[in-house]
Length: 292
Length: 286
Image 1 (tube, rainbow over the protein chains, first blue to last red):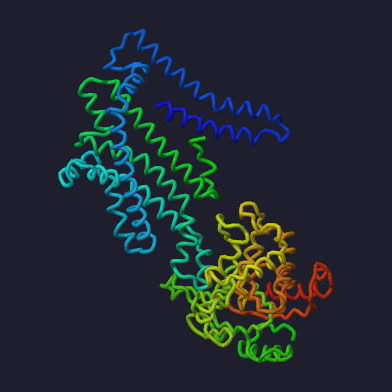
Image 2 (tube, chains in turn green, red):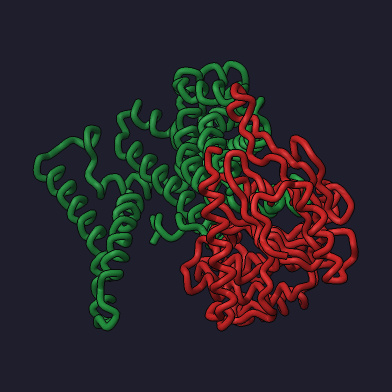
């Protein structure tokens, strides 16, 4: 949880810091600027520490029972006690479901986007059911996947995929189609083949948009894996949340949630860094600075 | 070879042949349009939009020709018809004796548009190579491209990315990109319209240098000054429907430099072209 909060807020802080730096005169003292940056990075961490401290104090002083709201120290205790057995194994299971569903969702979304880009017919035929598929509550249809595919990892991967592919389709299709018409015409003027236009222009042009879609997709993938586990599983962090709750082991529930958050933020940060390497020309890579 | 106001299409063809003969060029022109008419399907209820009507034009093998006229007079359409990007509804277009489609397949056209549209993930050198690379990845003439970059004053910027370059520099890369594969004809659609006036004059001089008179250039512009400075002949077009109104030869000596713009001859020709453009605009709705 610490990583999410501090990561999130320091991101906005760094954006603010950049704009502040832009208005500082060029001759401004470098040391002052350095201090300002440290302060900007430190502020959210401090705010978060204060919040945790207040939580701890309140639980201890008011005597809140642990099954209602465990103190931060109790949650950390549960995390240490539960590692590696069973939390490490749960993490491994959920990670596989997340990444498997994410990979399949990316492939499906990418192929659908290419179809939509190159065929007006496919665009008209595919878009309505794709959008409709997102209006269906995943938790409501998840049991169907269990009926069709059993209790193994497969139904979780499929459920995750149905969540992930949607942002990939939308952003990829938008990226592939938003190439300047004059540029396409320029390539046509030297008789370029459609695959040359795709590899040399459309795909690299779409890359920043595709990466954005994947960043949305990876956070949805963690949710998908948990939803999948909730309708039938014997392991995994989602399963652990439910199971610990039924046993009134609330600290374990919190510990599992903490790992889930870390997983989501970590995978997001990984994609963010990969995106910067893959598309350093992208404006978005400059602006959206979450991992700092 | 004075201007031929409101010349009938048939009359225009033969003096042009004399013109070619005078220059002792091969008798067949690089570009030849006869009775070209282009109708866009938009607004089909009224029988479509006539973008270009009854257009006859011959362009010599070493000639720099500007298409000048008000917005909507079909300048860009005419350029794209020549470049094989739009097929004429009626009439014939010949490029070195063949069809524009054939010429396009043989990579005869080097296009430059108003926006350079450089790829932000490629540096200047790599952007300049794009079209040559599309034509044949293995035979990209890097020495030629480097020489062209030097000729347009960008030898120190080959490694720079588009966002590090000014608007004028980007358009220079666009010109090098079009010339990189040694096209037979250079087709330019308001290439300097998006840069500031000072840069615009400089780019015109740079263009004349890299052109060198070895291939025909067809140059679409809104600027009378620019058309006069660059061209061997200015084709003034009129609107609704777009057609050729007048062709004015520009007899200024080459090489033309910055000082050319200050000469009395330049001013005189510019005045005649402006009068022709005024007539073209007065012709609106006729």
